[in-house]
Length: 191
Figure 1 (cartoon, rainbow, N blue to C red):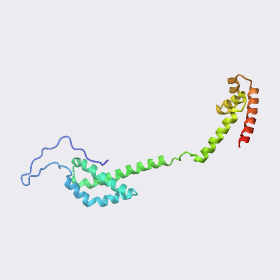
Figure 2 (cartoon, one colour):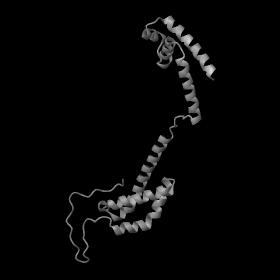
Figure 3 (cartoon, rainbow, N blue to C red):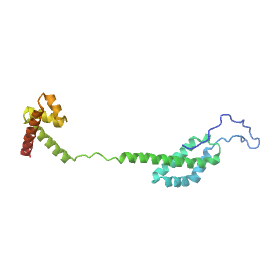
């Protein structure tokens, strides 16, 4: 946002000038005509200022146009019309900074690597392997299947599996090793 002096709370009384009908006292602010003249005279220099801060022409033009819009909307608060160009320059700098901040934030968000996505071919192979594993698991004895599912898919320790199934720790180890051996044979046979 441009730095614009606030309008004073109490204004001095305006005394009409008898010679030309103009008012003495506080200036009425930047007029639309003055802003139009400033636009014609300084648009290119403000565009050059934005170009020093930003990298593409479209962004520079957007920033300069936005600066004129903001100063136009605040023209009643600009006490000294001679400072209009200074307000415009400051607004261009501030808007350029904001544009750069938005870009940097966007780059930070985009620079995060996308998770590795398997190709359709890899996904099909993975599905085939899962199907083969499920079929091989179905071919195991019930107790072997329970031990392997709790141990490797539910990530339980051997002691937790023994407690859950109500069997001894030695039985968990035996069912587990026999189940893995049977799975290995079944998977090799399907491959």
